[in-house]
Length: 295
Image (tube, rainbow, N blue to C red; front, side, top):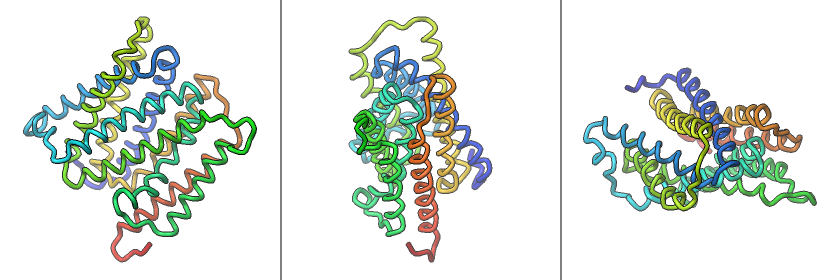
């Protein structure tokens, strides 16, 4: 049951959510380095789909009510996009590690702001365009495209960020007609169908200890999504969204502690610029939602 606008609780839940998702990313990185990425994500989605179906079954109208939508194509595209984005990001973890992958991925709120005009018809003022430009300077600092050692693999998390941004915008779009429960249901079920069709061809036998890690991965996935639902039940999205950047810090700690990753100076500087630009766009978004404020 919603507790209204409880911002402190919402912030605490958001920080907890980012920690759980960072742990999930660490588990995904380990499993995807041992097994096919598509198989790992497929099993994760099976549990996610079971979770959303169970949630839908407990609400009034049951699964049929949760699945009812006038926008099945857009909802299906959303689910497909998120599943594909997760595969791309997990693949990035195995190539670049958690630290650098998340450093680049943090630009997704800037991509949301940039694409909200052409996709949703929202107005983006010059200040937010300036923040978007500054944020992408941060991305370039991380990628170092002018260096002879530039690795094109660094573009993989950037692709994931772009896909996640489009997913987020489509979520906003369907929210005009569909409830959160309906969108959540379609996200889990269409994602599970997508991953089963792709991943079943890459099944590999898994050793017993890795099944335990897989079980932990599924639990973190379910608990992370449950926490995220609670976040938006108790607090306004604009108030808690900036705290989602804690996932970068938690992922960095896990990458350094468990996978022996290193942090280069350009990654720290670039990530700091991206986060600062992202926080500015959140602030401008809050101003935009207040009556009488101009952008």
